[in-house]
Image 1 (tube, helix red, strand yellow):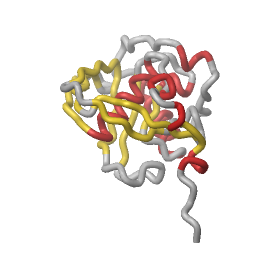
Image 2 (image 1 turned 180 degrees about the vertical axis):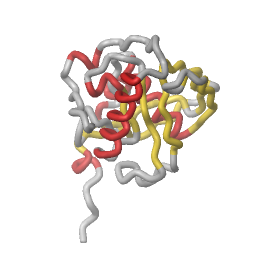
Image 3 (image 1 turned 90 degrees about the horizontal axis):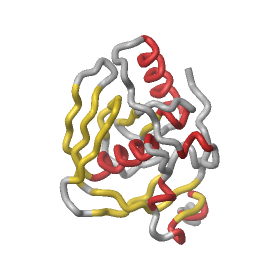
Image 4 (image 1 turned 135 degrees about the horizontal axis):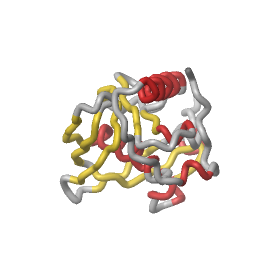
Length: 173
């Protein structure tokens, strides 16, 4: 089922989500199915449970190609429960991000370029990956939602924040 996505300003988006304690349950499977369907229907790169009003540490992300990020390489579809992130270098890279909770807006956000993420799939199997670039950016963005952080809170230069159509107008012609 496609769920409504909360928008910035809703207090539920600024709360820390609770750890998932029970794996391989019908409730968790239904939540993940709804999150995937919602993300895909809105052409999202990822979605966190708090964005649909569920205060659990669950994120989904991934795509082969995405019209909202045409230059990004593919990211494997992943369901990540109770994630932890570890930066693997001090290298920070700024990149443009959008968010389903801030429709129509983009901002240049600094993120770690290389990181390791760990957590579990919905059945409780361990996930442990080392990633870089856009994959690392997506994981950080979605995991931030679990801690009540929206990408504008990470931005250093608000002159690089605005409506997508104003920041990137179509070329004349």
